[in-house]
Length: 213
Image (cartoon, rainbow, N blue to C red; front, side, top):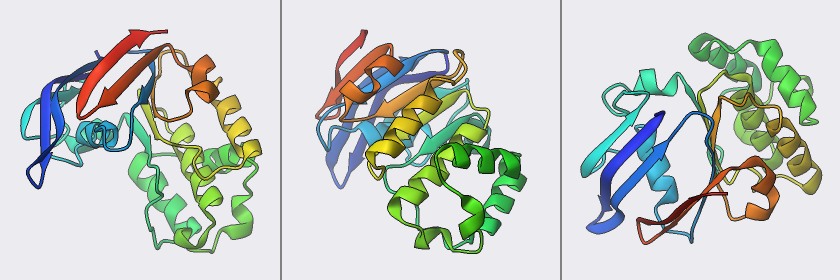
């Protein structure tokens, strides 16, 4: 099993955001995770990535603790957040950093970005945070798809994309290796129905539905 979450609970300011959640993600799972805002979806994912300490329960990713062995865990996961981070590096500096930290070849990122109709070379000296929302999202998608990961996690990945950008994005996802697992936090099940084989529905910090489709 790639990810195992057992009786995971998390509180913020006394409010329970995750309430004894149990989830396993296996190799090849293609999951749509749904639920209303505040259901705990993003919190669960961020706990898997080691961004949050949980109050109780246990999470392992490839057998590793996301907090104590975070570097090891992140080696095999690509994550695209709903809101791109306010990175002040130029695109050139960002590509250099990614190449050194993750071993992702610059040419691979340029190629994937081109397939998303984003010409990075035209903006290579611009700071990342000055790109448009759609351009930021396309570049983050290109970086994620350029990395050879066991698990791809997308948090509302098409929120800033126009219809053509969404179409290109979903087209690229059909080419992902079958052994790679994907997790989409989404409100658009109709758009990704052909890309997933399992749906999880969360509400009030609990998993209320988890079924194969």
